[in-house]
Amino acid sequence: FLTQASFSYSLPPSRTLFLPSILPPSLSDPVSVDVDQYEVAVLSDTLRGFLQDLPSPIIPAVVYSELVYTAQETQSMEDCGEKLKRILESPSVPQANHQLLVHLTRHLVKVAQSEAQNQASPRLLGQVFSEAIF
Image (tube, rainbow, N blue to C red; front, side, top):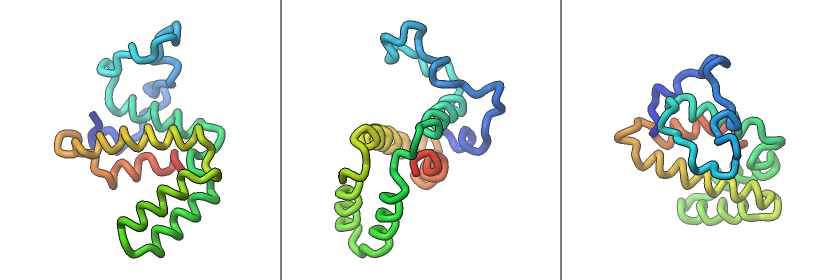
């Protein structure tokens, strides 16, 4: 689905799609959008654009600082994961943001699991989407 080349450049404004432009006119069935007709770079830029246009970051700045501190100070990977999960499930992260983060993470995990086909490593995905999440 995603390739390294699709993330190595930004599309010129004339080629960037905005989310409403790829949705069906009725907006009643967004699932019916045929994403296969669009270049991967266009789709990834559209997703990044949507995330960057949100009124606030998905993960609030206060929570970001706590996540970084926890990741740096926790030795065990398992303990770290549990602590980070608790932080992200705290009331400091609005419920809508948490749900968006859950769905986005699931999608990016699927993309990373297909790294052999799409060359989108977890590191590359982190570089591409981190600015839109934090």
